[in-house]
Length: 233
Image (cartoon, rainbow, N blue to C red):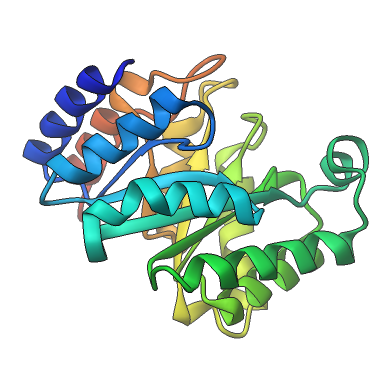
């Protein structure tokens, strides 16, 4: 979508009273930077988030677009934490990944207290290292920690167990909101999120009609109706 189209969608999301709109990846292109900036300037209700890798240049570029949202601006930074991604994609040792994440979160927190951190490919990350990472980024200033199913791999019971494991193994987890991000490769994104909510997740990263890469993401409207119709459960 171009900038004007993103603003139109953002206005519709504002009417739906979503909490946060992740408007784009500001460093990806000049067009995406302008789109995030325009959404930040236009939308007055929801928080506006921009995605960035865990490096200084990305974070600076993101805040230059998000600053127009004031205290509603959110920097969302990420780095991969699974063994396969650290070895094959990042070619970084776990200690270096952790150090990079801490540095990124601290830099983001120098701009805004509203910082989200994602452990990319979290569901294929060793639980002990995932818990270590989550604890470290919360200490560094992250107020939302996101647990993504980056490749659409988990089943509902596994996702619930993972969120519960984080709650039980991260001493400072009460200082942050647990978020989940999911893909629908196995047709389980919404079901996974419902299990995540049951076990302590409080932010659901979803898209309208489930539109997203590959088989799509968890669908906003399905989650809303599941949470509404089955609210007693």
